Each structure stands twice: as C-alpha cells, then as structure tokens.
Image (cartoon, rainbow, N blue to C red; front, side, top):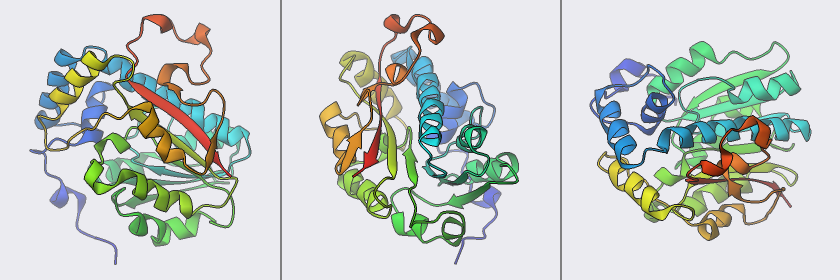
Length: 270
C-alpha cells in the first residue's frame, strides 16, 4: 500500500538531504538551513563543487538526448532531485513527444515539486514514485511504474548523482543489478559518480566536508564505477569526465581548466 502520509508530515528540515543540498548549489530555493550549512562547508573545502554539479546536470541532458535519439522512449529516472531546467521528460519529449518517464526519489519535497511542475506532453506520460533507490522491488513493482513503462521493451535506467550516497555495505552494485536485470537487452544505463581519480586532494576534502552531515558520500574509482556496467557495452567515449562526455568544446568555456570530480557513462545492455 502506498504511503499516504502528507509530505509536510514526513519532511524533517533539521536533517540535510542530498537533493536539497544539490538544489542550493544550483541556485534553487527549496532548501533549508541544515542543507545550506553542509553545502557551504563543502564549497569552502572544495570550491569547484558548484561547477561540478552543473556539469553533472548538463551530462544528464546530453545523455537523455542521446538515448532519445537512439529510439529509446522509456526512462526510469532514479534519484530525480528537485526539478530545475532540462528535466528528463523535457529533453526526451523534445526528441519524441511520446516518450514516457518515471521519476523516483525518496525526499517528499522532491515528489511534491515533481508532481506540481514536471508535466509532460499529451502524447507521452510522466509518473512519480516516492521510494528509495535501495529498494528496487518498491520501485519496479509500483503500480505507477508498471502503468507507465513496458518492461518487454527497452528502457533507459538513469541514475545520475545518486550512487555515491549508497554505502559499500549496502551493496550498490547488487542494487543496480536488480534494476538492470529487470530490463530487456537493448536497454541502456546512464550513471554519474564522484571520484578522486582526477583531483584526489580536492575530492577528499569535498567528501570529508560533505560527511559532516548524516548522509555519507563515498568516492569510487573508475574501475569500481565500471562494475555498474557489467553486462553492458559502453557507448563512445566510454567512461569520461562529466564535462567531456559527448560535449562540444565550443559550448563549454575553460574546459581544460575544470577540476574534474566525476565520471559519466552510458551503456547498452547486451
């Protein structure tokens, strides 16, 4: 049975949440003092974080556009975050108005905004599932998921900016495999993840500052992140720094001067 508790009753503004911290870095207004406190501490420790989250968001847009251009019409966006520009359904439905998207997040304030703001085209469909990434059964068997997505046809599983919040002991690789096992060959997986591979000192400072809050963040290497794509073939350019994945350099000023803090990749299920 769905949890019908009002969002306001479930919202704890005293506890920082990754979606609201991310919203603050992007210049949003749907965050609270606890979120801002962690966000500012991270900015001091790792000044490149704001550009990093912008690169992460830009990767999402490029990846979804690429997938829609490959003929993918179904998207399962897990760890949606608070709506901003170029949301998944907007990008996908700009390519194909009939595209269908299920948004998933565990923050009630995200779901309130998603239901209010993320309206799709008449030809397509969008649905909103309040659930935790770590509970694949709750996501995959939710009535709104099953009413929106056809699991006999290819689906793009999109997990952007979320997996670093899943601790090793919670088996993030096993969790992702539950999702990827549920989709047919020809489906895709799109992932971003923070790493210390490019600038370890800066990213370790980032993680240390972030981990002053209650939701720990785990840096992983490129080799570790590649495990999420077991059974998938990475599309070109493979696993790359976020701002370098299928980017036109003319559109990204000072690309060479960036502190690269994350990988992005898209793979096709074999």
